[in-house]
Length: 256
Image (cartoon, rainbow, N blue to C red):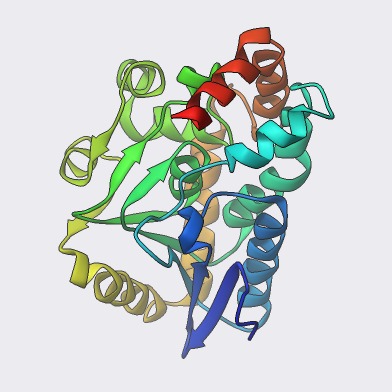
């Protein structure tokens, strides 16, 4: 195991725990990190895991895209490149989570913002520590939901509330996230991983084929409605990023 790995995976019986491991940067998203996350998910399935717990080291789950890297990218490429980055490097992780025949449980502590929020939303279950804070809106940066988040958000809370969360909500507490259906459970911080593991163990006690088929059926039921796919979201993200003020808002955010 690499001592400086940005994604760490460990297996304990039929359960694989995958840890986002950039705590000094609140586990902000980078391309290599997302590639390693996809590799870890695929390895969990191929090694015979029957459930995956996705969590993170440090005080936050994932603060979203690393904006310093994004700002640096914009110095050499037009902002519309953001859609290509999402489509090529980030969406494959979401598709992997969706297509795995085993459940993925997000165990969220601290902040889950932007892409980090939508990464958690892509998982099959979400357990939130009381310290968790969900920040769904990318609108302040002039961007739109991504990583399959537009459909997942409407599925979770309905259209009207999804619009509110995506456009005008600054932050959602763990308790409120539980109350509106964004997370399955809200627990004390010291019970976050034990609760996720207990849920994983209950799933592992079921017949594996029925679990995989149930996930497939419910995912298909969610996807049957006409709506944006992760691929079309990435295309719309490029359109949103073409607004000249978007890059300036990224710089303003970093200056704070």
